Structures are given as C-alpha cells and as structure tokens.
Image 1 (cartoon, rainbow, N blue to C red):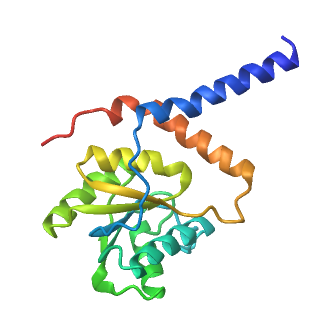
Image 2 (image 1 turned 135 degrees about the vertical axis):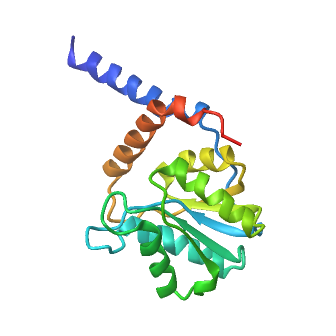
Length: 197
C-alpha cells in the first residue's frame, strides 16, 4: 500500500475515532453566566509530589473565576489517590484554599477512581445539600465524557472548559483527545449500563 493511501486511511480512521463519541456521548450546553448552585471539578492527577500540574492549575483557576463571579456558592472536587499517592480531591481543595476560596464552600469527594465515579459519588453529596444545578469544569478533551456522566447520574449542568495551558503543545492536545475518545469508545457498554436505583 502506498504511503499516501496509508496516510488517507489513518486520517479517516482517526476522524471516525474522534467523531463517534460526539454521537454516543451527548454534551450539555456551555455556561452562559447563568447562576448554578455548585461547580464540579472531576478528578485531575497531581504530580508525584502532590503538586498542581499546569492543566490542574488551569482547571482550578477557571473554577475560581466562575466562583468569584458569583455563579455558584460551592465547589465540589472529586477524585481519589489513583495516579499518584496524593488524593486528587485534597490537592484540588488545597489549591482552592490557596486561591482564597473559603473552606466552607469546598465539598470533597475523595474516593472516585474514574470519571463515572466522579459523578456517581458526587450525586448523593449534592442531594444531601439540596444542590440541583451545577457547572462542570474540566479540560476540552475531558468535557464530553464528564458531561455525559453528569447527565447519566441526574446532575443538571452546564459546562465551562478550562483554557489549555501554553505548556501543552498542539500535538499533545490531539494526543489527549485521541486517547480520551478511544477510552470512551471502549467504555460504551459500561457507559450505557443502567444506574442502580
């Protein structure tokens, strides 16, 4: 097979890979300055030393910006110790506190192991506090998956994508979209399992 044909097939396959989750994982609308009750940040890994990565910093900054605009009264951070010994929710909570967010405004969910659990475990916490409207904040490549699971677990929400840090190259962005959407396709049976009532 000629190199040109191989490239065409590879491009086509990549296009299908990236397009399929757009159909199978519906995403909520973007946030338009409409007030919610809570901002939800699904898990983002920290460094091995428990510090913020450039991406995590951007996500936290975006959440703080929305909070300071008065668009929510609480910020829920979700994530366990998955990729490093650091509990993701604790790293995010400390980052929010350093940015001036009151401790009383931060809700921690410290057990989630993946995106589905971020929202499955967040839902009862929100219900207990009677928080019914959310803004989901995460990266561009993670948002479709996050929004799907928020909807699956009955969390009414809009979305607010964090800016991509300058340290992340265009190639890395493409790679992150491809890896995330590949996982989404592989996880379709799990994604569409019925929620246990």
